[in-house]
Length: 258
Image 1 (cartoon, one colour):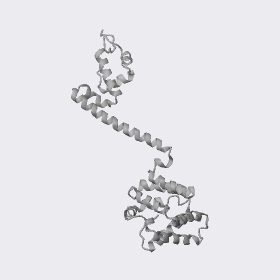
Image 2 (cartoon, one colour; image 1 turned 30 degrees about the horizontal axis):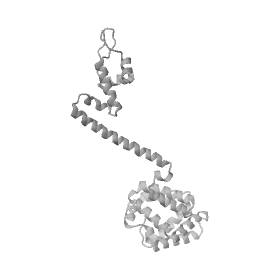
Image 3 (cartoon, helix red, strand yellow; image 1 turned 120 degrees about the vertical axis):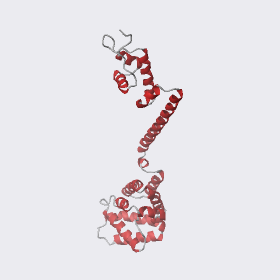
Image 4 (cartoon, helix red, strand yellow; image 1 turned 135 degrees about the vertical axis):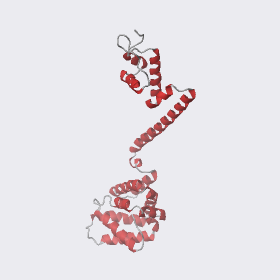
C-alpha cells in the first residue's frame, strides 16, 4: 500500500476544496496519483508540493491556463511570466478603480454622465432662475449630444455658455418657457420666433463656431433625435424651435441650430 493521504486530506492540508483539486487534475496542472491496492488514490509529498504551487500562483492572480507552463519554467522564464501577470493585474486594478470612481460619481448626479464644464453650465442655468423642467431637458440634451455627436459636444457647450452670457437671449429663452402655457395658434409664438432668430443673427456666437457647425451638419439624424427629445412634452417649444430655424434658414444661415 502506498503511503500518502486521501484527496480530502490533501485538499484540507493545502487549503482548497476537493472540487478544486479535481479541477487541477482536469486541467493537467497536477497529475492524479495512482491508486493503491485498496483502490484509493494516495497523495504523497510530491503531489502536495504541486498543489501548493498551483494554489499559490492562482491566489496571486495567475490565470489557471498560464500556470502549467510556469511550473516547468526556468528562473528567467518564470520571472518574465510573473511580470506579465503583474501587468494584467495592474490593468484589472485600474479598470476596477475606474468603476469604483464611477459609482462614487453616481452620488453626484449629473457628473456621472457629464464633464465638469457641462455641469457648470447646468448650475448656471439653475442660478439664473431657469425652470427646473427646462434645466432637466437641457441636461438630457447634453447627455445625448455627448454620446451621439462627441465631436460637436464642446461647441454645443460653448453655444450654451455664450447664451448664458447674453441677457437678452436669457430673457427670450425664459419667454419661450412661458409659451408652453399659450394656445398653439397664439400669434405671439411667431413673434417670439422672429425675436429669437434676430437675436441669433445679432450675436453669431450663439450659432456656434465653424468646427461645431461642421460637426452638426454631418450629424443631421442625431441632431433630429436630440432636438425632438421631449417634443411631446413641450410642443410649443418644439414649434418655436422649428419656426426660429426656418427664419434663420431664410436669412441664409445653414443649420442645424439650437
